[in-house]
Length: 252
Length: 267
Image (cartoon, rainbow over all chains, first blue to last red; front, side, top):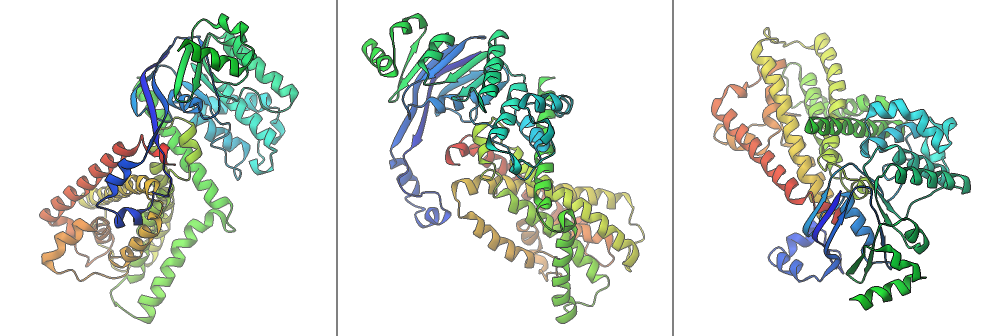
């Protein structure tokens, strides 16, 4: 279950480098005043949302609308400036694959590092390491340093680790399938498995057809505003993103 | 039960982070893991050749061993605090993309050099057994064991406190690294590592309460060597030191709590 209560996330619009100790010391007296003067940008503004278990929320909208910020808020990597985000259950974020990967370490070491950071226990990782490498189709390269991996192989390993994390909530920020065509099919099959297991899913996507097919709720974000579509059947008559944004602005 | 499970997982993640950091640090260097033993030894040789052989600043017994032990503790402190400066910045991708306990990176920066220190301590003990001339008779007395463990805990708390402050500060003020390097350069000469500092008695409390590494370091030396000031016997000094360390530790926790939710926005 995910609940957002009047959530606002704002960032300061820094125009010059502000983060030096020297500037802090030199401008000590007016540092706070000057900091307060900096303009603020609301990436997410006063958003209230309730996503129940096994629901699929698709988040869409133009670039810079705050979709990734929302994904990070739900993932718990950032905290809201105002309001509350309540999440119950283990969250598996697909915000960026292989974030903890180190090129100098072997793939197995990276499995342990990334896996534990995603919430998996070492015991589980040791027990299922072969399964994870088999899924990624790179079993022969378990002890190879990651620097010798192709980018596709790295993504496959990262996807495989994340898919083995037994989460309750999955967040996909435009990453649903990686690798070549056959591996992508495998990724989609894994996604279908998550749907079958009634997992709660948040997906950031620009693909309207995908949204129409899977969403139980749609959140449209644009220019600091947001609109929640609970009845997804109305999307049938909307053919592209522009029409969707027009539809949302008309309702307002 | 849930809390215990979470704590256990955090501990596991901390161990994996530290182990991988250690692996990364040494696998790319020519001497590999041996470098962790060679580095303080080389540092000791530099200080010993200049201050012990050329300048002859002291004629006291076991000067080389005392210097070596001081260098080990200083290497532990300077390496751990140095690593903490990049604890968040260096793990930017992890912190901004995966929900992690923000205490883990500064703690991992402490744990990795601590493992090094423990391994180096074995070398010191071997050298001590074979070469020390001024061994106290009651080295295994209960008070010595208490002081030994207490000093280790005090240094650990001091490092963790500094790590929490530095890791957060360096996110907001990226030019803090050279400032800290300057402090370390002064610190090595203002801590009883190379020589005994002639601190007048009336300033001893002030000195040991501002240089929080000096008190446990001096206490540890007094366990292993004769004719060292047993400063831990001075009750007033011990209380003042404990208060100073507690204040610093609480301040570091305040800094951590104040900034832990903001650092991702500034990474």
